[in-house]
Image 1 (cartoon, rainbow over the protein chains, first blue to last red):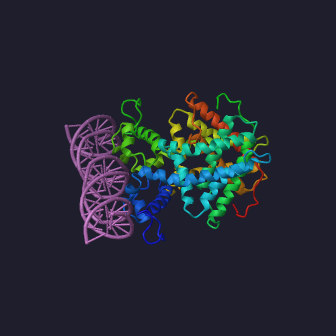
Image 2: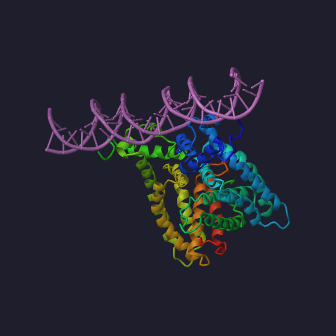
Image 3: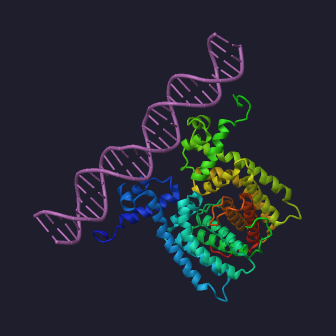
Length: 220
Length: 220
DNA sequence: GTTTGAATCAAACGATCGTTTGAGAGTACG
DNA sequence: CGTACTCTCAAACGATCGTTTGATTCAAAC
């Protein structure tokens, strides 16, 4: 049976597991969230995870794949609209990079939790996961780096990658709401994130425009 | 018995546990590193952790306290040398904020591992841990914010805290070497970190100097 | 109606977790 | 010497972990 029995009013077991896993991984981490918590939150049987995904690690990968595929294609689509043009501003490219992440964190499909999962993945330093993310992120990162390089001819390739990395770190950080700044309870979450994005874009644009370092002893 | 029996050639059990815990927490996370791994790496008995620290959570807190106390005092000392002067540049204050973290990650006392532990703590989002860090970080953050505010009169208090938070996020990520940029194997780790600090300071200085946003709908 | 196969379920598997226990080693003090 | 006290140790505690098993349910195929 591929589709749900009587109409798809209730989501698939697989989807319910993915949703619950996303939320719980964001809250407790990959090691901290157990499959019993996940299956309980999804209101499915414990064995369903291993039946549908094979293992906990495979489930984690699937949580990433579902969101990253869309995030990547959205970023590339946004980049495609501004890349290579005469009139392109640095802020436009930054927006193409940052805005999809913001949208992802804003829509009510559960993407908000995923942004925190993403931030966690950076911190977990798991090599398997890192390679998985690099395969997805590295691809679009190179395209953005090329465009940034075009708009910032004074910067070397090394500089570009360094600063893009800094932006990514700050973006991940800000979107995940990990910082010391706590959202005021009277400010809606989407307003909070909108402000974060604006602050970030302005900050990053200025940072990227800074003159090249390239006087250091190290090669990078 | 307070000191080691025959000379302190071999470090204390407590210190060996703290060192091993720091390294393993950095690599596998707080939930991912077991006390059996920690005690095995420290070559002490499993029960030693609960004997000396009471619990795993207390051990985690102690790992933080040991390093944060020194990091905070160093930052304040560096800030004290430049704060309030007529000639102070923005880069000087940034250096006072960033450099101690760099030094911490560079000296061979095991501080390098702690920087990654620190980054992990941000990601873990554990409320207890967050409050613990806020009690330590919040204190110095306010002092730095005041000095940044003096040097950047065009920015509101909200802007200052936002940007300091962004800097902290980028700093934490860069120092922890979490980014997509992988250190080249032929570049020494301290050179890598030195370059990271230079890139970060330059980037952050430009970002902080960006004009205020303050046209958003939200209050922050 | 019978068969087939995907999906779900309760239950248990062995492994590992943080923590506790109680005995024993070793030093210091009377 | 004997007592007191700190520390270490092997062993076990109950709890929870990810995973597997075998029975059961149920709609579709023949």
